[in-house]
Length: 402
Image (spheres, rainbow, N blue to C red):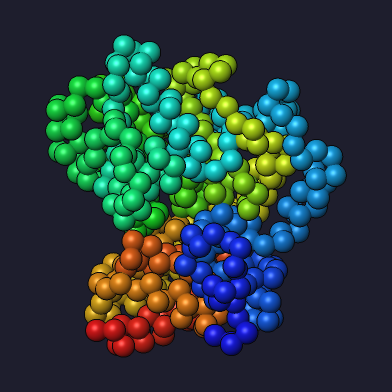
C-alpha cells in the first residue's frame, strides 16, 4: 500500500479491537468506494452484508435526508407509525405475526434467546435449554457469545451462560439424539447460512427436518437471518428456499442499508411471549432506522433486487468456479445468491490486504474462507470484475504459500 496510508498509530484514542486493513475510505457510489488518497475499490464486502443498496443510492439518500429533517429519535413511550409500517411489511413478506425492533443482529439474537427462555418458563421449565450449532456465530454479548460455536471468540470471557446444547449442522441424527437426551430443550437456534462460521448453508432437507422436530416437540424454531436474510440469497429470507416458516426470526445487517436496525419477527407460537416490561430498547425502532428499513424494502421491490441477487450471484459463482474451482488448495466454493464463500486448505487472512491493494474489498472468515457479500445492486459486469480481480490474487497466494 502507499506509505501515507493509515496504520495502527493513526488511531491512538480508538480501542484496539479490530485488525484493520490499512485503508481509510472517503466516499462511495453504487458498488464502488474511494479512499482518502483517491484510490477506487470494488466493494465485494458490502459492509459485511449491510449495504444492500450499495453507496449513495439515489432513491435512499433523499428519503433519509427528508427523515433527518423531521424526526431522528423520540422514544418508545410514544406510538411510531413508521414502526407499524415496517413491521407490517416484514410480516407480509415472512408470513409471521409481529415484530420487535432493536439496533443490531446481536440485540435481535439476544431478544430471541430471551423469548426462548420465557417460552420455557411459561411452560413450567425452570432451566430451559436451546439447541445451538458448531461453527455458529450469533454475536458477542455474553449470552450470544455462549450460543456461538467458536472457542476463539469465547476465549477470555468465561464463564459462559448455561443452557445451550450444541450439535453439528446438517446432522439429523445428532439433533434427534440431543432431543432425546435433553428434556429441557425449548428451541432450536440456527443460521440458515452460517456467515462467520465459513458460509456454511443448512441443507433444505435438514431445515425441513428441524421444522418437523420442533412441531413434534412443541419447540420454537428460531432462524438467525441476520446475515443471509433481506434478499441476499434471491428470496426475502433464506429459509424460504426450504418452504418452511420459523417461529422466531432475528434480522439486521441489510435491513437498513447501512443505518443500524435490527428486528425480531415472530410467528403465533412466540408472538405473545413478551409482555410490557419484559424487554425494551432506547434507540430501537427510532424514526430514522424505520424509514431506512421501509425505503430499503421498497427500493428492493421496485428495482427487482431479489431476482438480481439470484442472477448475478449465479454468474459470480460460475466465474469463481471456472477460474478457481480446479486449483489445488481450493476446497469448495459454496453459498447462495450473493453470499458466497471460497474455502482454501490453508489460512488466508493475508488476502484482505492483498485484495485491497488490487482494488477489491473482501473478508476472510473462519480463517480459511474468502467471503463475498457485495451489495445486491451488483451487476453482471461488476461480478466479472470481482472474478478478474480476485482470481490472480488467490492463484498467487496458493503458489506462494504451499
